Length: 454
Image (cartoon, rainbow, N blue to C red; front, top):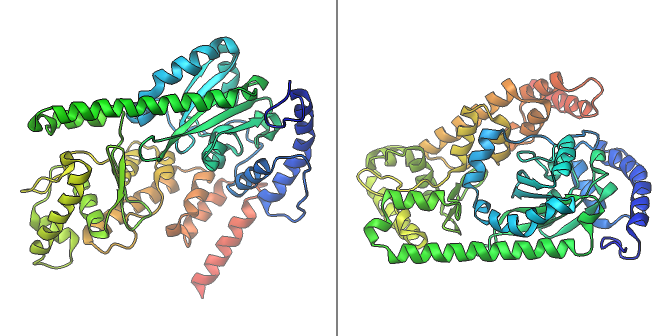
């Protein structure tokens, strides 16, 4: 039987070839990981695998760590799955992939856009084996966490991919092969997640990639049908009933759409409602961010003080609210802010609020994963400055108090932590004495201390 990854060779030939390259290749991985000289050519190794290994090394993924890291506990996972837009298409995945996998000796996984596995099902014996490498729901299988694998690399490349045996970056995954296809929103094109088949050689059989691609296409079509049915119901309902809190709540909890207001690391927020996304102006970003922190609402005077230093800006605010209402009305009339007080009628799923919620639950690893940078970093609105400092300070405190060495180093890579000596000293305390990462951290500490003393 010929292998689709290397069409000129049989599966056994490919396995032997990959094992040969694994020995030389993983020596090369160590060279990339530690920034050492001595790059070598690896004849016969696919370029996309070599490039993925290089990305994985740069992301500090550890090929010797046998298990994938856990990103969510059971309670967090259950709530996240319930709200995730892919929840609605799971019956399609169940029928087309999961049910046949019980007899075929395969596993089926569905992950989110960050590479975190949300559902893992299939052959019971294979599920027990896969637990040894933490191929389980709630684990992080992104390239940053585990290196080259079908789920993480498919997300990184934005297309379907097959990874066979020793092509995996992590040594513990060499007995496995996998096929994965990204799942894009059928309307907006936004990346929602990934669908994966994992097992032995059968997982990269010639027909497997086509099967997963066809399943994803069927699931996308089903998602579009569900949305059209929901839209038809929405437009046929009386306006008052359509915009009532119960109607809005049912739409938000349906799993079809996930409203979001992305503020972290960007000066202009990205607002997504009903499957449509638009960038907001800087001022509209600030207004929605502030209203999102006060579900009970803000008076015109309170909102003006949070937006503009000094007094007397309520007239300016009212003009800005008129423009914002027009923008939101085009997306969804139910999202238009109320007045007296100004209040959001629906939850926009603010990413900064998600970080704060995770920190309150002690889930600093998830908070750090969500955190893409400071809240509207260049905004000078007093209320935004206060929110930005609150989120940043609480995250730093949580990582310093409870974070692992990996979490501390991840935090140290953020722009706001580029000169943070305390974070790097805390990481040094937790890093093993022989860790190759220590030298780089020590050099950073010495440089920062030298600059501070000067």
